[in-house]
Length: 291
Image (cartoon, helix red, strand yellow):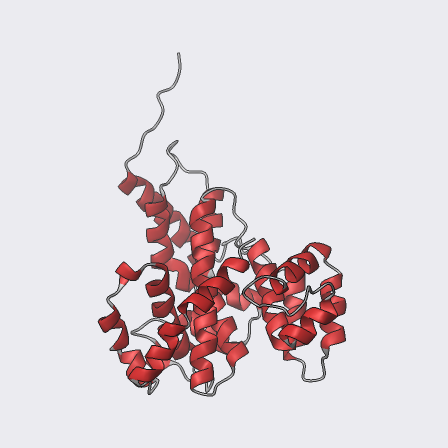
């Protein structure tokens, strides 16, 4: 005689997962992924004023898969090399040390925390949004003459808690035999990604402006941020730009152009026009980064 399968409703599954996730957060038992070693070393090289291209090249060459991905990206139409790039030194000469550091960090993080078995299509969507936010963040920072690489990092990692929540949920054993749907997972991500992202940022010892951005990038929070990099404010607008690019139905363009953060950044209509005109360029850059 077989035991009948426990079939739970979507709401029951949501409540069980929410309770488990909250308990892990409160007890400090959340299983946080490690920052990929190469990504950690790239951060240190990028933050070292005495670093040079040879240090970054040597670091990347230690990981042949990463080196191959970087050469593929450097040769993509998004970066339009004059002739084929066959070495990391050529890639650095063409793209610049800062840009290549950002690419190396992004590839390393994507192959780590964004590498999830199950819901691959949805995870790629999370990655596209993260990358698009980072690239729009660079352009916004450039407009207001702030550190563009810091803005990229803030944008890329603002929602880093989301894939961690997905890893956690997929590893949980529940009383239900029914797997959670993406809508359940997405709701939990929206509710808890800031808290989980904060824990992860502390574990990874990310730069203070990035940690602040993870906590305060949302519309109702960025005004409380104190970092002179304005990472939270920049990322707030960048996330809206990313959402609009990836799903134009998510926000009307007129609403996007008149958001409070647009005014707080002292953006004029022509500044927003310039951002809008970058959509195809940013889309091309994001697609070449998909592994």
